[in-house]
Length: 199
Image 1 (tube, rainbow, N blue to C red):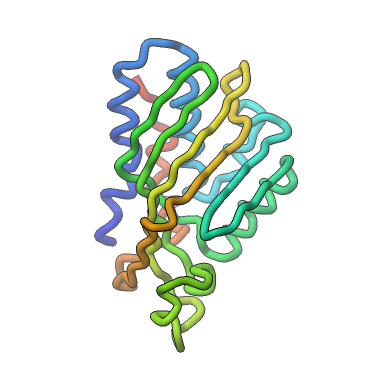
Image 2 (image 1 turned 90 degrees about the horizontal axis):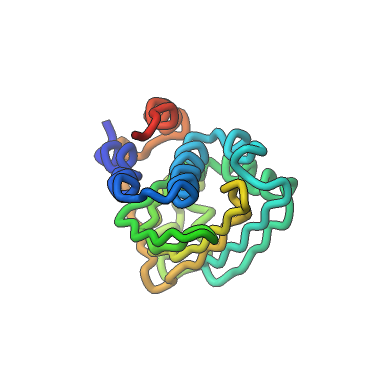
């Protein structure tokens, strides 16, 4: 078993604790949508999180990471983005140390974000020397702090993701291969969490 599996499967434990004190129905719906979105995304079931009951028909993602800004405008571009992550074997990610503030507009917060990524996706960085001569399929753990704002529509459906990376927080770790969580294992681990109904 990977040393990260417990942290991975309990990534939303803090959010669930927060939900216990949220009485506003809209705020609960937004945070519940976020939890389900995150679990489906990491399980590779992105088609479900983009369904009309969870996401607007024309979502817009604004991602600012690694010194680059990417805007995904519309469902086709968002689907292509998820497809590219899946094809690159970079879908296994999880949040930790979440600090979430919710209101009628949506929610914002700051999280420590972890992701298993193949070496070619690390890009040019201060850590590029550790990749010299490495197998392109070798996986690294990329950890950094992200701030984000997710707006929601009147039906509590996701409008988009606005994500901002704290570049100074980037940390690249070379994990033991036995600790890398595969996409198939992630889907297996999260299936019970996705189907679990919150009180």
